[in-house]
Image (tube, rainbow, N blue to C red; front, side):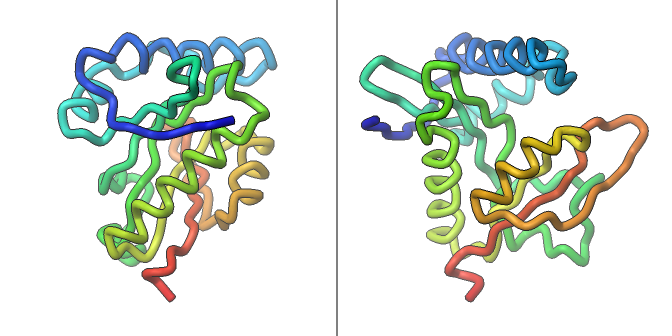
Length: 168
């Protein structure tokens, strides 16, 4: 599949929300409670305005979304983690049309290259704590589990990172 990634524009909020909504519905159909709430429109709009929200595009149109920025959630990433040494992936979703075709791997590799070019040591993300299939997926993409942060008010908290060439 021929893919490329470009920054999503603020007028593409509905496209990003549709991709996240489709992922949410698919997760629910599999009995996974991840993302079973409306997407954080305010956070998505901020990412769109800042140029930190991206779309993976195939010939048929958008088939994935990913947010990549330097926001290290302070409830997860501690000062000793050197949060400034990384770029962070948030709200990554792949449409069913792009699933099983390497779209997620393509987006993560693109984000990793972005982190390396920015001189960061790590590409990091947090994942749903009780989705072991997702954990295995990220490990298969070269990420190592750092730890699980178990906060009662947060369902996410499985922390992963992948070193960049900037860190070697």
